[in-house]
Length: 484
Image (cartoon, rainbow, N blue to C red; front, side):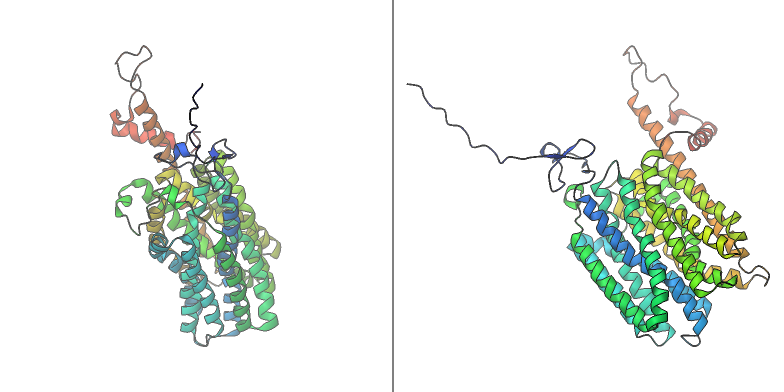
């Protein structure tokens, strides 16, 4: 009589799906079991991540998009003396504060994300952003407007932007820059819609009800998006720390900060000044709002394209080229833009490349510090961007007032152009660092000669080079064709 061997109960069946790069993932976007205890998480390169991209697109549209309409509000404030006693210089601080406060709040955003998670953090942002718009509708003095449209709105934008920025890189690997570009283009499409609708609403229902309508629409859209977003923090295990000063002992981090500071000094002047510049060359407020809308359309078109090309050309390389191109546009096109057609041409061309920093900072940051170190690195970067973002527009106002009547905008135009070119030089240095870093990693892998004898590498190691040869090597690395 044959004995029956008991068959052990099988473990629950795990049915994997496959990402576009061929790696197995489950339906929730988790790593396969054999990678669960691995050192480095492998992003699923899609899946539910595309829903997160769509949600971040809406968040950017209803935060940065509304903020981009400040140029329309500024033109209205100046033309109608809405807040008696307020000056152009004072109004300029509101636009800068909304961005600088969004960056200043970033350490607190990292803390709330660590304590309560991404979703609660985003809902806090929804509250502050809607409160700022609603409060601005009841403002009767300049300082009330400053607190509402500048500070409260900026806090809301910071919780939404910083809180969602690290989510998409967790879901994507090979297509990371494309996904980030699509999400960032929401700011452009939102700016296009809100620039045109804000001007129309002000003319139709007045300033106060315009703010209230914007508050209601932003509250509904941002709340829904915050509920859709899902992070992968339990798999990536990022360091959600507010500060890590050790990062700033690394020259590559300082180059990122230099790129960001100079980019923002130029970007914010462009971002807020086009409607006012259009009025200075004799165009109507509606034509100025069209210029601002086309700048936003350029942002919407350019960011996904830059992201797509970054995944193929190299993320640091693409950031360098587009930042330099924006500087050249400001120097050789904006300075000659005195007709409506040329103003519109410049607006859409500059829009495609002016926001390069915002659409590439997360992918470039991952290239430099990795996913785990990205939150503290970005948090410290945002803190150092507070001063440039606060004073960029006031600097432009002072440059205008200090210029003769013949060409009042020449100095701001030159200032913006050279800021972008300086930012491009920082990314050139960052590119050199990345290429050299890759060379040193390859050298560490070379320990034997072709015969297998312990003869050491046959090439000259980077660490053994003299200072002069290292400098020459950095220059060669910056100009090399390596994809970084």
